[in-house]
Every structure is written in C-alpha cells, then in structure tokens.
Length: 113
Length: 115
Image 1 (cartoon, rainbow over the protein chains, first blue to last red):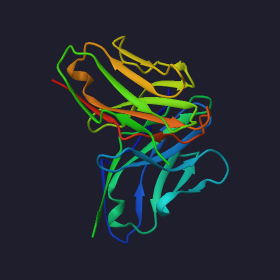
Image 2 (tube, chains in turn cyan, brown):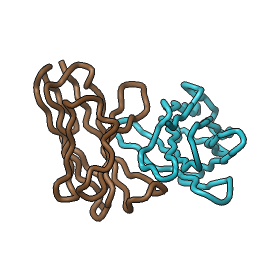
Image 3 (cartoon, rainbow over the protein chains, first blue to last red):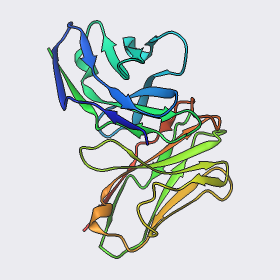
C-alpha cells in the first residue's frame, strides 16, 4: 500500500525567504507524485505533478518540486515566499496503474509579513 | 469554465438519518472520485468511477456507504444510518481521462456534521 509522510505540522517562514515543504513517500513501483494547496473553505487546488523525466518539476504560482528517487522524497519549494502563500499544502502519491491518491496529513504554511 | 461543484455545502444530520451528497464533475471528465477528509487530516480515498462503472470501492468504510454515477456524469454519495464518526468533509474530484497520471480537480466539499 502507498503512503505519504509530511513530517512537519506547520512551516513558518518570513516573506521573501525561501519556502520548503517536505514530503516522503512509500509506494511499490513507479510513483506519480502531486502537490495540492487548500485555502480555507475552498477545494484542493492542483500545484504540480511528477510523472517521469526531469526530476525538477515547475508548477503554478512559482512553486517547484524535486523528485529524489533514492531518498523517496518530493519536497515542494518556492524561492521567495509571499504572504498569500499561507495555506495548507498536501503531498499525494498514486502508484502506476492505480488511480487512487494517497495524501499526507498536510502542512500548514504561515508566511510572516 | 465551471469547476467541480458539490451540494449541499453543509449538512447537519441527526444520528441514524440517511444523507445524500451530490457531485457535478467537470463536463467531459471520465473519472470521478470521492474522498473523506476528517478534521486535521488529509483526504482519504473512498471510491472511484470511470464513466458509470464503479471500478474501486475499497475505501468505503462500511456497507452504510454507497455511491453511484448512473449516467456517467453526476454522482451521489449516500450514507445510511449516519453515525458521529461519519462527521467529515466529503470531497469529490474528477479528471479528464481514466489515467492515473492525470491531475484530479476537486470540488469545495460537503461538510457533514452528525449530531
């Protein structure tokens, strides 16, 4: 069975500083990896995905993520955080051939002005 | 372009009541998913449809949960004899193709509170 770990409950970062949200996964076979963001009272919004190819994936709103197969990680990064990036971030994995997504518990990101 | 819509947005039920939650996916999307999100947790998979066929219902927590998508578009998640542990946000998602590398587009969810 697949699983995702997001080890930090909350990530605090000053506006303008780099932002990193950590994610590690466990899955048999090749993984499809996703990041979603959730704002209050709104649905999950897709940020980016890794399917194959270049390990560095670029997504919406200036976010990127790096797939590291040896460390089974898919950390989300943004070079310069904005106050508007404050939200709940979820990492998810779907093993090849299986449509169901397994989500981590989420990380609350707080960007301090 | 309309996204995934869900109704009602909020539902309060007394323990033992039956509830029905509706999902309207993005037009043309083949795949439809239901997830349950408990407070402070990530979404947990419930069930998956490709068109009208329910291909995976392994995440449904009990036989009180039932989902259908009879015409391959709108879907309904029904919970019979609701219990307090059913209180959660129920999320619906759709994706364009029946492929697992497609991103899923989520609706705003239905918050169910069972008293």
